[in-house]
Image 1 (cartoon, rainbow over the protein chains, first blue to last red):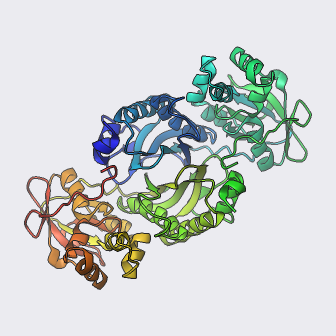
Image 2 (image 1 turned 30 degrees about the vertical axis):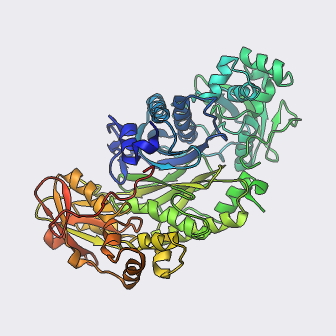
Image 3 (image 1 turned 60 degrees about the vertical axis):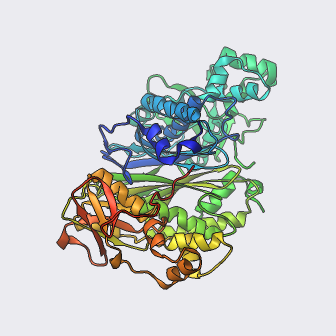
Length: 313
Length: 313
């Protein structure tokens, strides 16, 4: 059966069956709006994923797409130091889409919501020529100010938590028709966002914070420009995992650093801290220097491209 | 020039140029999240519009599409009795889209945001095969409980504010290749949402509230089922405007009531009130009765279809 045969209201019923509201969610799906009770200011961000741009249905299972739609969006709330509470998800899809695909997508959304600690509180469904998913995260700053990109100061250190360059290695092998190493392929399908660590960073006094979606150098560039500082990344601190070495050796020109420095979509969190304030589990990867806003690699300009991923480019 | 030639970051810069944050918006566009300070609970809702499903670029100017993307979404916050504060808007569009279209779209978004009293606080842009726009409204309940669909009680009256059946009459003429009456064509392009009246209704003690997006009978059906009541609409209270009569005479089978009872997308607000509590400017159009949940027209079942608009149908 297709979702066209099922109809809009039955489809919504299928996606939202059994959802309940609890804790800060006063009212979940089913009325004109969801209602959430926050302890502090609201942090909100929206993210869109398009079939054949951000994912391919032959590379990713429906549940992977659902999980990724949650993960990429919630990562933005983590990057403000907020506690993600609720999520609204819009699904536009062709009427010919099998209902099983939507069931898998919805199951993935719920699975990742549980991991992320958020509740699915609303959404929209409509027909379209290709699958387009837009998620909006609603998060609670709970008495703390947002951790912006603009607070990095000379003398502080750069630290990160999460993974770098795994999803990019996955896209590299998938794009060449391979399905392994499996670890990097899975990383492309569903990012491993370090849930909860954004709040940990905020409570530790992080002075700037961002999630790595375009690539480490590109996203540190945002911090450098917003803060008016020079950043220097020390690659001797990097952990190059075996699967990345394998992919780099086979197809990445031999240098796995390229994936780590320019690969996006793993949604690691990276930020600046006073030297003694780096939280447990975070790894120091560089330092904040005075100077024209820029990002250096081991004290020098990076020779390769650091533009990161741009749509329409 | 196309948005593909312009590139993503330049496109975002163009859309957000000159935007500033004020009042309850602590932080607008430019960081990982927007930050809003609310006085009460948060009401949030999301709405998606797809090219050739909800609008056609040969029927609507780019600015009309931008205005409609704001209006349809904010109407959901009005329908909870909340005060709309902020909006995030995602735009997926083909790389071949002219930059002038996006400029017009952005101008329309800003114009309608101003009318609605909301601030554009964030968004996303990406490439896609067709234009898909998703808006999410962030609204403040400011100490009042949300006005749900479930509170209508026998003995109360139904009252509405705004217009019925104008947009549907517009679609009817456009679909037949006509461009007039101009008033109904304009109503399809940009709904006239009665901004601020949702809050007026909440303060007057509305017991149920909804915005008419699928059609009056369909949307009253939501209230009837959620509240467990029978609703009776009195069509002698309807104001049938001249352009609707003209369209009905020409192509609607002669009965303009069809547009008023089943036409969606004008986003009138309709709700239930105690008899003495109907706010100024609202028109009583019916009453709430005990009985099996259903919607009657002048005391009888409506002979025509009242299904309203369903996607995928």
